Image 1 (cartoon, rainbow, N blue to C red):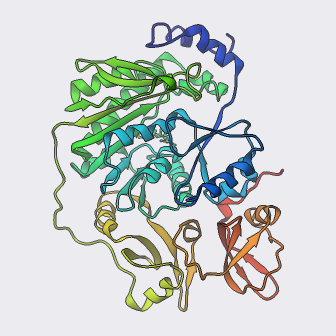
Image 2 (cartoon, protein in one colour):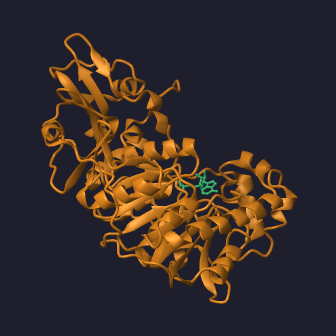
Image 3 (cartoon, rainbow, N blue to C red):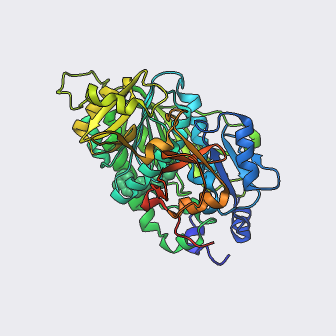
Length: 464
Ligand code: SAM
């Protein structure tokens, strides 16, 4: 085995469920598995899902067994040149990590209004999945500590379109300011990354036993720092993409030793070939995904319930939120299907829209954390009108009466490159550019030209 160094393979011997020969063979074969998860906010009918999948592959797709929304594609298409990708029809996600769905389904009442924190969230794979699973009266707080990655996380969640999301850019310890606040905390921890070696052989050179130890210590620190923000009875979902026991079983042991938490086993079907591993005085269960056993990459996940701690009680605090003035509300209403149960926030002339029940959450988070995004940015208030924002185009809120221009695939790609889509239309003024029934963004149609409002930073740069 060439590309997996001995210092790494030596650490694999004796890991629960490890079949080293099969593991090495599968890495040598280097098969690339492509999977994606469709966006149920945007593709509600099965026919719409099928249309998107058929546009990606001529042959049949198969389902990811542990996710309602996950599919395997037989070959990897160019997602960059697929307008559906830019419309937020799906998220390209490694299949094993979609198991977070099982963890959520077996530990939470997904119909209840939950406050969910995804602590290490960029680029947004787990967050987009969590947003698809929670109810519309739940809130997802999706956090990323690294600023540039938080920007990418914001873009991906905007494209996903849900209004019940807040994106923050904070260190885990900052969440200590919100004792007992969250019902669910997902920690998809930064790790040594060995689970992705098959997909990304280059990453092997960065692996070292010393880094595994550093990662394990950092994982403990993240857990310890953020733990207080989980309420009593709240759920912790901890995951890594590492095979190292220091980052998996030993973290389960550490949790049992240092935090008041009771393990929650997750049922796994035998046909899924996921390995159940146990550790610590509770014989807590965790789940290992090996690429020679499952159709996916290396992954580890475990779930705990917090047995004692704070439960957040709302304190009187200065409301930090300014509602959009009455006189401006009509400018916004023209764009939106219905303002029922929605709150319109004025953030320095920008209008942010989110469910009314999220108002106290945004208000509180704004006082304690650095918010990158809250709800859907509808646009910028100008003297006479609202200048619509790309987030509004990506949401599912836009009024049906707003003009739409249907683009072909080629026109869509020109639009997504921020070029002139070269379309003839009778529409005048602001319009949604559409591909096969899905919005791509805004354009303003003038008598002799089309102004393309696709965000510059998102445009396709790659040549075919
Ligand atoms: N959950 C993401 C997804 O599904 O797309 C992947 C998260 S990745 C495994 C771990 C994330 O933790 C990275 O985005 C990384 O920037 C972030 N991170 C790095 N150091 C951190 C720290 N000290 N505290 C919290 N997060 C950290």
